[in-house]
Length: 463
View (cartoon, rainbow, N blue to C red):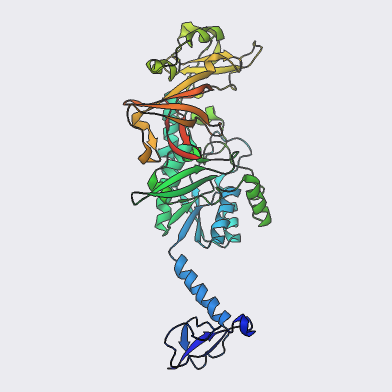
C-alpha cells in the first residue's frame, strides 16, 4: 500500500489555506517533510484519498478525539425547576459534558403550605421542559422516605427540644450530596452538579488532592453556608457551574436562551417543602400547649451581662442566659414554646407596647417564652457561642484545631448574615467562639460556620 501525506504550501511560497493529500515519497520515513514550507500531519493510504481537503479529515479526527476524551465524563444535575439549576445545566452542556437531568421528589404532604406555593408536580413539569429544550435525558427520583427520616423527623425532634434547626443545611448533607449522589452514581455519573452559588477549587498536599469550598462570586446570593456540612468525599463529586456568576447574569442568560425558568421566582421556605406556616406544619407531630409569655426588662439583662470577656467566663459568654419565671412578669399566653425561636417577632399578638416584642428565649420544659421590648434589647445579643466537640465538622480536616489552640476566623450564624470577626478557642469539650462585636439572635440549633477569607473551613450546630 502506498502511503500518502497531508501537504500544504507555506506562506513564503504563496500557498493557499487549503491542504490536500498527496503521495508520500518512498524516501520520507517520518511524519514531517524535509521540504521547506510543507507539513506532514499524518499518514493515510494513497489512492482514493488523494486530493481530499484536510479540513474534512481534521474535523472528523477532532470529533472522534473529543468523544474519546469526554466519553467518561458524565454529569447528573439536580434540575429543580428553578432558573439557577437550568442555567447550570446549560453551562455543563456548553463545556462538553454528557449531562443528564434528575428531578428529586422529596415531599408530598401539603400540610401547612401557604396558598399560591407551587407543588412538586409544577416544578417537575417545568424542569422537564428545560431538559427537553437543552436536549438532555430527564428522570424523576422519589427520595421522600429518606427526606422524612433524615431531615423532617430531625426538624421535629429539634423543635421539640426548644432548638431551631436549619433544614437546608441538613438537606444538602443528608439528601443532595448523599442519597441523591448515590442515585446519580447508579446512572454512571462521574459528578453531581447543582445550581448553588458557591465555588470549588483543589490543591495538592503530600500527593493528595484537597478540595476547597469557596463562597460564590455573588455576595448577595452566596450559598456556601448551606453546604457547610459537606465532607471531602462529597466535594470530590460536586460541580457548581454558576459559582462564578451573579444572579442578574444568570437571569439574563436564561432569558437569552428562552428557558421556561427565566422569570420564575426563587424558592422560599423549607428545603423541598416550600413556604409553610411553621406552627401548622409542626403540629403534625407537636401538640399545641398553652403557656405563659413573660416579659424581661432591658435593665435586668444589662446588669446580668456585665461579665468580663475572658476564657474563665466561657460558660457565661457563650451560652444563652438561663431565664427563670421570676426574671420578669407574665403579659400573655402562647400556643406552645416549641413553636417559637429566638429573635422572632411575629405570632405573639400582644399589644400595649411602644416598640415590638421579640423572643429572647424559650423553655420547653416549663412551656414559657421570654420576650423583650425593642430591637436593641440586651437579651437579643450575645458575645459568643459554643459548638460541642462531637458535632464539630471540618470541611478541611488538615486544618482541624487542636485542644488549647486558638485562631482568628470570620463566622456567620445564619444565611446571608455578614461574616463577623471572631476568635475560636478549641477545648476538649468543643469550640468556644467569641465575636469581636456582640451578635443578634444567636440561636441554639442553627449552624455556625467559619471562614478563612473566601474559604469555608468548618461548622457545627450551636449548643
